[in-house]
Length: 432
Image (cartoon, rainbow, N blue to C red; front, side, top):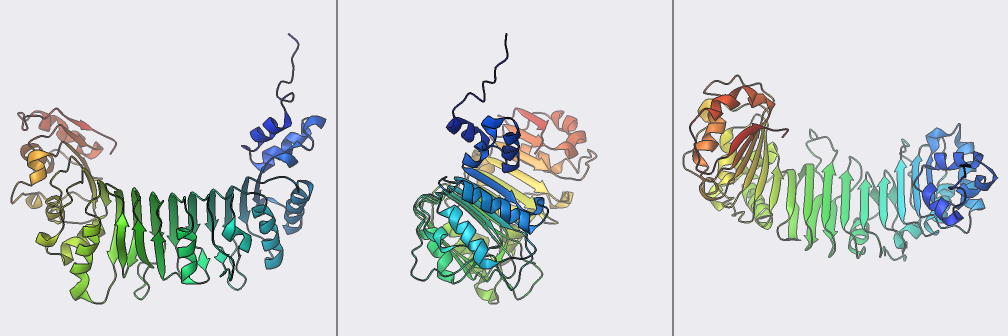
């Protein structure tokens, strides 16, 4: 059969849709295929640029300007820019980004890699009211106060802000609250971003992630105060965070939580009440991952009988970094309906610490799956078998015990023990 170029026979709009899934560099390379492809890449509604990939700034800006000029009637649905030039000119940069935004951009990513202090990379005012924007990903840029401009992003669903500065505390809150369909929000704070409060007020938000990259050893510096009022929130992640306040007014029932947080306050007397109030607002969560330092904070500053009951909690993952086993037990006592428990130890607890003063309610009625992980190689002595056996003897409805590679040598010994729980099925290695 005679070969035929079926791809080139496709209509331009379909070819451009295919090319939009390639990098701009690969899209440009197709111009060498034939006359049919020479100028086709100018009609691709996507532009991906990395200034460091060009020989110098002049060629970078020439390429950028040529694309904008030759495709002046084209909507740019996706624009990705990695920006690092020798000389940043504010007016020229803003003008070009403004042109992109006004071309109906849907997905916008700007990663500024310049080491700038005096001349910051700023966003155009048109970005504040872009009616086509669906996803926004920004690193190390600045938003000026828009004056009379109204913040309105009616289609924005995903926003990732890292090391982003806002001229005025109200501006970030306006960006969040005026995005009527926003579903995913990620904020990464850094030293010098001047954020004092992060007001997360949204009727549509489903996922919120906040992470700090500040130096934890800095005594006087705290992460921004967080205010959460998001009734549809399904997932919240708080990583490496230390703040004076973390206020939760409203989150969705049965949410999932990943928490690595400590409060950094001077008034130690109010510390316990602050933690209990914080936990009470989270008491409806369904699943939780909790860090060692958060567990220690709760243990050190709270009276356990005052802690709320986590009646909806079905799964808990807890980490231990040189932490006593006893830190976890009172918290487990607040989870009466827990079904699944994963414990990750930095070092294996001492055998004499592994005791139960009373059988927890979840051990008696609900806990069915337990996973144990430790990096320490266990030799299989009876004392090292104490932790898995504690669960096997006391969890009345246990179905499965999962152990990682460190417990390899104790599995056969545990299997040799007479059935310890009426419903117990198996103990096995896992990649937990």
